[in-house]
Image (tube, rainbow, N blue to C red):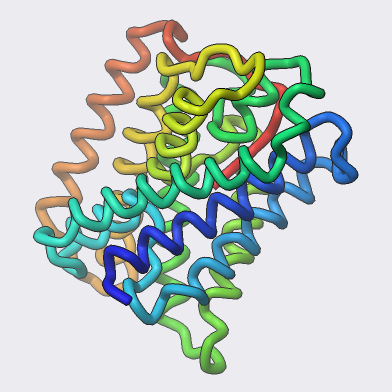
Length: 274
């Protein structure tokens, strides 16, 4: 299996399990309906672990453009491969979302609220506020990338690392996910959101594109900071890139603050994640 196919298959599995648990919890007449936030966070944590186990040996199981770009910025991944990985991740996320759509075929008609249907595919803020939502995604992805690198520096029994990363995802969801649904992954949000836009989902409503940039830009900035701060604090390797990303993050947050909450999208009742 090539790295491209590995990232595509791995991200598809991630979304099948992740968006699948969101569908099960939120769509009407599902046996899992209303089972709650803890079920969703557990589902996403297991989704990441299973996807990583499936393709880690072929691609490293990034499954997330924010992680791929973060590793490239810190010098731990070749820039020449970044675009290939990102394309594979977005395509895989779209495929995974399409599988979830097909699996829950009769439940879309049974569910009246368009926002719940969108919540199966994409994230949105509980309280729309552009700068706060952006900061939440930055913090969540900062913790994700720094945590992955810290976990990788430890010695576990063979094959245990993906399982521990799954627990990291659960911890982020439980502690930090309540603000924006913790996309912390541009492909995880953009790919399924695009699938939502394209698929003939009955009564689906708009795809909330005005908010779509937040779970792209926030994770990219937060992930880059996570990798660079890890190198500076844990390895004693400070680079000019750290200051550049800090300045870029501050500028984006300042610009978002000037938007005064406009374009942040509406709150969605159906909850999601990674």
